[in-house]
Each structure stands twice: as C-alpha cells, then as structure tokens.
Image (cartoon, rainbow, N blue to C red; front, side, top):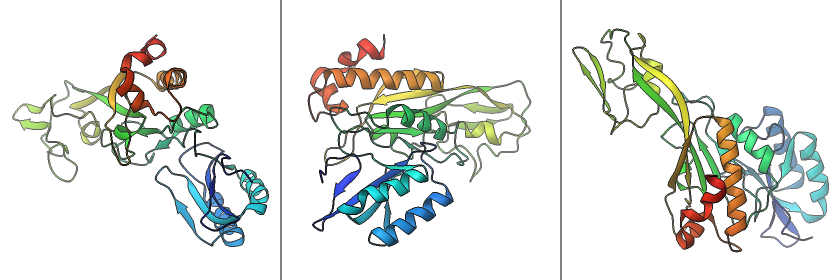
Length: 281
C-alpha cells in the first residue's frame, strides 16, 4: 500500500500504519461522545489499544494492519469521520473551544466552514490554519501559515459606572492592565488593550460596551525547528470575509510557491506583494 495516501502514515512496525482521523461531520474541531467511543473500539480491535490526540485536534490510531485499513476507514466514515490531514493536504483547521469565557465570538463553526471547503485541498507545502476566539491565541494562530484572531471593538457608553471593580479586580479583571478605574469610571489604554472583549462581558451596567467584532488575519507563521511569527495581513469584518480571504490566499499561494515551500518561505523569498493580487484584489 502506498503510504502517501492522505492521513495514512507509515508505522514503526513493518506492515502497519498510523491512521490520522479528522471530523467529516460536522467538519469541526469537536468529536461527539459516540465518535470517541467508536474510535476507542477501533483502537482496541484493530490497533494498539491506544489513541493519540494531536496538536491539530485530530486523533491518531497506531499499529493498524495495512490490510485492514479499508475496513477501518469504512467504520470511521459510518460515524462521520475520515482519514486525512497529512502531507501536502491542508491540515485540519484548528479552533479553540466554543465554551471559553474569553471568546470574542466562537470560531468552531468557522473552522467547520473552512474544513468543508478545503479539507481535501493539496497545496505546495505543509499548510496550517488556526482560528482563535480572542487575542490569547491558544490555538497558536500567531505561528500558523494562516492565523485568524477574533477582535472586539470596545467602546465606553453613557451608562454610569457603579464602581463594582470587576473590570480591574482579579480574577476577572483586565489581563493586560489596560483598564484604569477613576472617579468618573473606567478609562481604557488603547496601546495595552488586546481587544479580547472580556471586560464587556463582566461589566454589569454596560459602561464598557461592545461595538461590533472583526477578525485579524495573519500569514506566514510556523513552528518547528525555525519558528516564525506570522505577519499581519488584514482585518476583515465578518466570517464570510474570512472564508473569502482564506480561499484567495490559498489560491495565490498555490500559484506562486515552489514545491515544499510554505507561506512564510514564500514571503521571505518574494515578499507579501506576491500574494496581494488575489488576496487584496
């Protein structure tokens, strides 16, 4: 069996493989309890009895006999999972938890949209897309080929402050000390503020209000032996705009990159201008 098949990785034992499993339905960063149960059964019956959760929110089942891979793949497909996310195929789009209190807005559904569109897309080099619901960027959006970070547009309102101090007091107060509480109410340091929006959630009188949300897109980041921070590409107002921008970036990247070259390497070689024709068109 060819080991370049998407999601089928060569095993350490001859004649065996590791299967990398990602969500087919609903194409998200989440697995149902039923799916987890079937994965456990497959690992026990066909593999080593163990499963590994990867950094990109896929699951690997090790020591699967090559001869049983079609049977295992069929069992996975029956519960909305499939083998994929390796090699030159776009890796699983990673998203932070939809239940986190710091979310400016949940991004799991956005990951679902991007996975539906691009799960089987082959690209010149390894390509990671990570989505973060706030500036804490727990999903490493700042060091991914394409990173998306939700932003809140914070504004002070005319609702009087009641000086409850929640916005400045631990554990719920501003994590970057961007808020100062004065006699007349809160003041926000625009240089310190990271637009996480959590202050708008805990401000009971709504003195600190939310004036819409948007998304920052960063490109060219990577981890590994030579980590690279992504650079700011643009800010877009909606999920639909993110979907369009990601598609444009991937299309242009595929057109200009050399074999094996990641987005960051393209930027280092040719500059961001080589991606602007589609990305900013």
